[in-house]
Length: 105
Image (cartoon, rainbow, N blue to C red; front, side, top):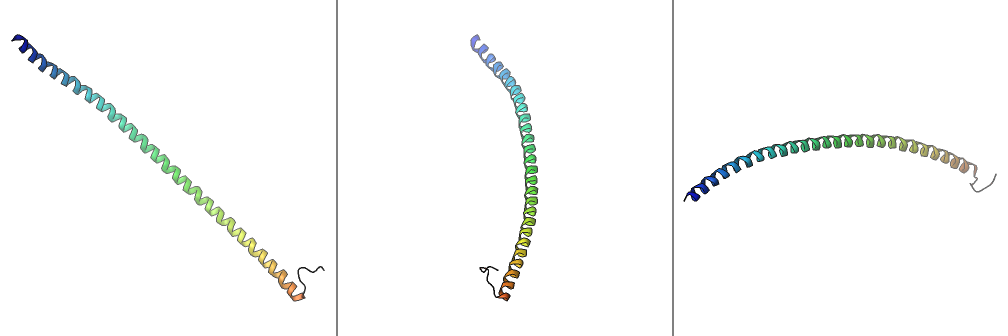
């Protein structure tokens, strides 16, 4: 009978000590995991901010390029219009003289 009494008290003592040790380990591990999670979240936020800044810079570059291309297109259109006017002037002069482009002077 004394074995049974010793067994019950040992079981209860073991469960209490195990519960305390397990609880302390759980608190320590949980705190560490929480800190790691906070650090990971901060890192993600920093990466998101960096990506947003890159996106803003890319959109600014695209806008500058678009404006530059619009300017070049306007210059080309102006050059085309000048050439048309010159060609129309040449064709108009030939029509008045009665000469064709294939005739040699």
